[in-house]
Image 1 (cartoon, rainbow, N blue to C red):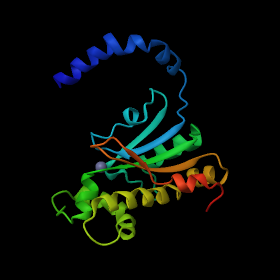
Image 2: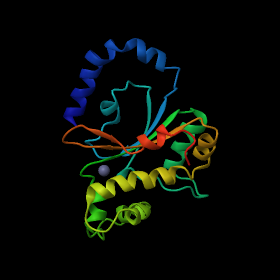
Image 3: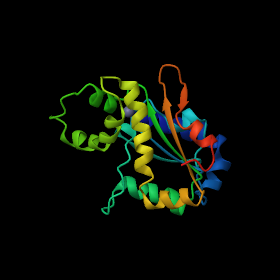
Length: 197
Ligand SMILES: [Zn+2]
């Protein structure tokens, strides 16, 4: 906690004054251009990876960067997605997986999750990811297939489906490699072909 307190003091002394103008504008304007859905993993920092400023990204982080498919019952992830797309009108939506993801490793390697029932239940949202990945304990392959499966889940949300149909938003699948800092774009080819299914 001491680290956090010192961090806040540093922010107020050094960081905030240099960006006072930006924060003054943001005080009354919230218009992020991108909905960024990443893993809760502490090593994956959306603003750092993308070189963005406060106000640029609307961020949702979940274990395993999972996006539950739309269901009639609302949940926090669905509400955040709907707000970003329907109310804020984000132009792009990124689902970002990453190397050495604990959630994907647990699934690929079949870890015993009986002591973590909430995690086990949550990871069922990766059932389709596992089905897409070919057999074996290939974590990187599951990470990639999981990003693609979550993009498919994302498209089941009515607000996203509507924005996609109207050409108002675009979906992107990324994988961040922690040791090299490289960001792989899994959907670059698909996005380069407009009107592709
Ligand atoms: Zn992760």
